[in-house]
Length: 148
Ligand code: ATP
Image 1 (tube, rainbow, N blue to C red):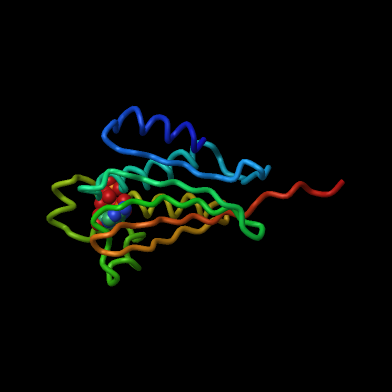
Image 2: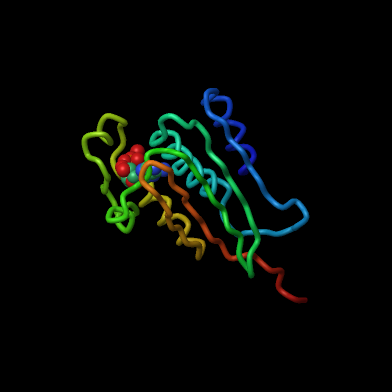
């Protein structure tokens, strides 16, 4: 699913560089509808592009932790002030109202993404530095086969 979304973004945003790193040695499974995973990826990758200016690059990573899969989407854009970070997952919250309005959007994307991943016992959080960029991190529980 991730590879497909990245491929589509590459076609649509030719001026952007997208990287996707994951550990192919692992064989793992998360329980989430493909549509929902695709939807949350599109929301976060769209933001990464919308809120980048000079460095047109988005890095996607997938790592396996202790019983979890950690998916990160990192951009090198305008960043989010510390005081705004706790609010960006709230409905209709937008950091810079004027700039955000120019870019379009309602402040709903991240609230929808949060609700979707929480429906699968996942979490979403953000790390950001103004002027350097933002990393959105999803943590999903790994699915383990019931013992027979
Ligand atoms: P939409 O409803 O179309 O998604 P939106 O982008 O304004 O509109 P959210 O995706 O919920 O809404 O994001 C909320 C706010 O968080 C944005 O308005 C923006 O200020 C900030 N934001 C989100 N992602 C990033 C990012 N990668 N870099 C900088 N700011 C971001």
